[in-house]
Amino acid sequence: MPAVSFERTSAAAPDAHAIRAVIDNLAFYCDLIVVDLPELSAPEFGVAAALLHEGLIVCGFGPTQLAAAGVHARALEASGVAWSIVQRVARGSPEDLPALVCDALGLRVVAVLSDDDRVTADLRRGRVPGGRGALAEAADQVLESIRVPLGRAA
View (spheres, helix red, strand yellow):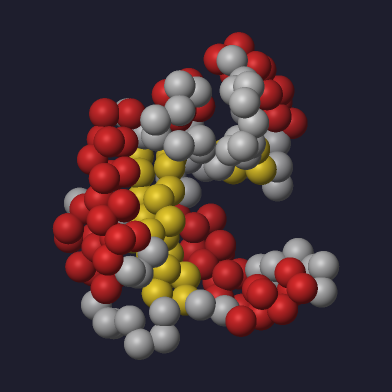
């Protein structure tokens, strides 16, 4: 599955035409494209967000991360994209944290991602993380939640 990300340290941001060209060309060949959006304040955010069918906010479990998810959720309301939450939880997080976040932000939680030590171990060994464990389960939940059916139009 292709993933498109934005370089966060580059001095030169891609222009709107380049962003659209990359996404349009990938869409010709792929059923699903994952786009890692730039920061909300980046000028290219609006261009990239306008190309999405659905969006996910990965929400942390600490107070600062929860507050940031709220800021993002409010800022994204006007984007016209259906936004959902992937809620990260740690050992010892309240069991009802995903429900509380859902209620507070007014967005559905499509997956719960618990800490998984195997991800760190996989990265250390040079393996692609997420082939098993909590990350794989959360990815499956996200894929099952997609509202736009996969498959190229004939």
